Amino acid sequence: MNLSRRKFLSQTAKSALVVAAAGVIEAKGGSVLVNSFAPATMAAQAAAVQPLFAKLDEYVARHMRETGAPGLTLALANRDGLIRASTYGFADTKAGLKVVNETMFEIGSVSKSFVGLALVQLQEEGKLDFNKPIAEYLPWLKINTKFEAITAHHLLSHTAGLPGAPLLLDALLGELWTAWEPGKRFLYSNTGYNILGFLIEALDKRPFADALRERLLAPMGMTTSSSTITNEIRKHMAIGYEPLNEGKPFPLHGTLAEAQWIEVDIAAGSIASTPGDMAKYIRMLLNRGALPKGRLISEEGYKLFTQRAINSPYRGEPASYGYGLWVSDIDGHKRLRHTGGMVAFSSALDVDATSGVGAFASVNANLRGYRPVAVTKYAVDLFNASLDAKKLPEAPAAVPAPDEVKNAADYAGEYTSPNGKKLVFVAEGEKLVLVYAGRRIALERPAATGDRFIVKHADFETFMLGFVRDNRVVTEAYWGPDWYAGQRYTGPRGSSERRKEWEGYAGHYFNDSPWYGDARIVYRKDRLYLDGLQPLVARGDGKFGIGDPEAPDWISFESIIDGRAMRLNFSGILFRRMFTP
Image (cartoon, rainbow, N blue to C red):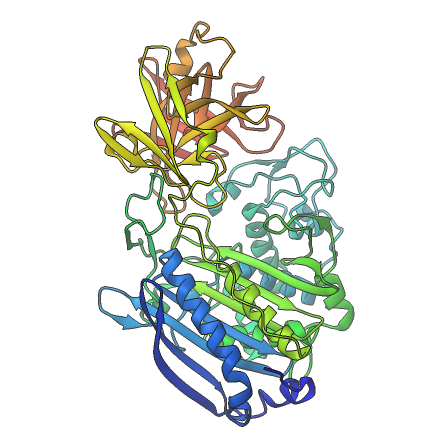
């Protein structure tokens, strides 16, 4: 398929009328409902765009089946606005309610770019100096630092050196701290953006929600969006889903349950929107801040907003971070991207500022680190190929079966713990099988987990099972507090004397906020681990660094009773001990 670039870029949004279509897409493993809306002017190019939409819909349906997403919303736009808004699957699986164009999804940290835009506006109005200490605008804010003062620029670019863990506003009520010199290192910090929400309120003299609505949503015509997630909009929202066993490893296609509903008013991620409205946002980004009438920010403001403030990879790809967006060069095209993860929603934004096409997608589920990046990327790639008169690209390769382990032979063998307990693994083609309690259990490896696996057996459901390599050779295995030496292990098998106080730190802790939930500490082979995976490194102040002792986030153990800690403090967020596994 080949669209005329001029015709395509000029005709898609000249009419407020839309053409609606609904249907069912057959995909491997079942069918997926789809509804789509497009400007009436696209009808004139229906024959030309149909192959592109068909490819995209087919991929989205397969993607949803592969990931277990209950529902998905997708916006496509160019410099003239909406190309197509499409919705897939269910907003409420129990009631059988479909996702429709009016269904609101939480966009998560894609909201951060809205915060950046509002602050650029305030800078252009002479109310903000990005390089002035933030404490001069918020004198109540307490930050303990031995470095130079933190500025709005540092907060926007995640280079303030603040901790990354605390999300809730409780963290701002006490004293914050920094670990690094501002401007030197990138560490994604929701706390930093929550501070910026208070900065907007202080400079604009009105509540954060009102400021974003009047400054951004209203001028862009985003009338079906909300600047904060409140009970008032709940009836318009898709139901959000999360793993049923939230505090334990989640396998592909694991059971989902309705997530707890919460109101969200924090600047780090507070916006709910629809695909039609997100198309308007993409249009503004593609027009460098210009609107159909007037501008949201000036040309100079747009350059400031999309500057490359600090090098920071985007999901493993080379990129830089600006003021709420990652900025990348891909095949000579400038891409503006971000993802968003909420308690029960996962989102992705991908805007090709060079070709003039962008996509936004959101799924109403928390699927453990998943974001619909592949969907938005493929949508943009399809339109770019069409605009360049090239063959439409094939859809991304199917996700391998979770029990497909091509290097299964690496792990095969017998592993023995210091107390004589054994685990036996067998490679059966491209499957890794645990022989245990008279059963042969095929291990599952979630995406991007390397040498870590899920074991679908009640005795192993609390932690992932992992392996350790020495010069690329697998020599050890571990699960929770248990350590096993493999047949190729040559190190010491005995353990040095265990630290009594550390034994009292091990256990299950819980925070009532759905943002945090469970945390499990295990004591394994002379070291403490968070959730059995992340090593805790003792610091000189009685706290533990999480992997890196010099990083701003830390864990401490408090309220010791009979040798056991009753509370875990995670960078100011308190978890209480639970007397469950």
